[in-house]
Image (cartoon, rainbow, N blue to C red; front, side):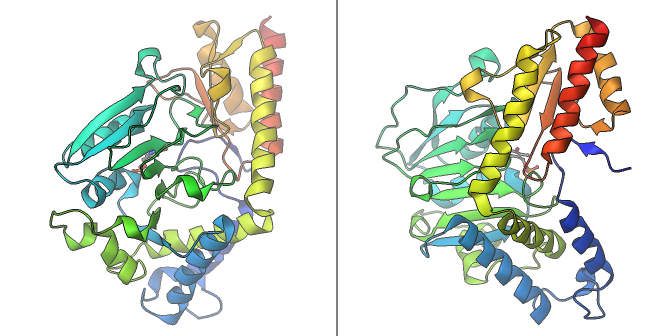
Length: 356
Ligand SMILES: *Cc1c(COP(=O)(O)O)cnc(C)c1O
């Protein structure tokens, strides 16, 4: 029986996407070849990557001055690639530190220029999104992490920024409409909301590039990937194909507004259960709660193991929290059906009755 998959990443994908992907591993569109054995320069794959880009543009209503790239190296490579491409040694970038991923981005960017941490929620184990700071106008860019996968917080309002904004959207890309006028470079590892591990979506305003003085290795220069439509070298063919299928699925669902509404319902259902259930407590500050990664703990830590076992028995997997937060984390990305969230909420409710 298929499990209710609350894994944080790699994570749940829509059933229809998995079925199409599986069929194409055997025979891609009746070509007599597997998606795994076609040339990345052949007509079949060219059509796939062009469609993936076109769908991204359509879903986001992306203006032409942004390039769309499917790269490899994970979101973690974007921590340094963004800085290498945008930040001169004499320049300064501002970072908002909202969790482990932000901290890693800060560490990497420091190799290439000055980095100032403008605001941080580290003082309370990243349980909130810092607010009330001014973004200075002397920076090259501001870096944000829209959703903090590990701690379960999410930006629901954006800071006003007089400088370009770079945003790691790995764990909430395509979960809600994006106001593109606020962002100049967006990156997202595919394995949370978009596809399997192995490719990273990068959306970048082209005029931002070519301003740094340093020499860049070819593979780390966004402009080479733009010139070659993400085929400067052999791209991750299969992950890009599955992203294309997921993008088609997003359109079928009614696009980002429809997904946002559904994600809101799922999150509200689960947080409501956490708030009324005496055996559990939410981790993130209410206003900053993530709609993608719901973090909570047991009011009595002694019950943690028992609850995880109960989840397992109900077919709910991936509910154990990250070690830096403890407790539980239910990742309820786009592909997670409302029905599965309901199952988890019912498991929690029944657990409370049983242990009251
Ligand atoms: C998972 C994640 C990353 C790291 O992604 P990799 O593809 O494993 O490098 C970075 N940022 C955020 C917000 C994430 O959720």
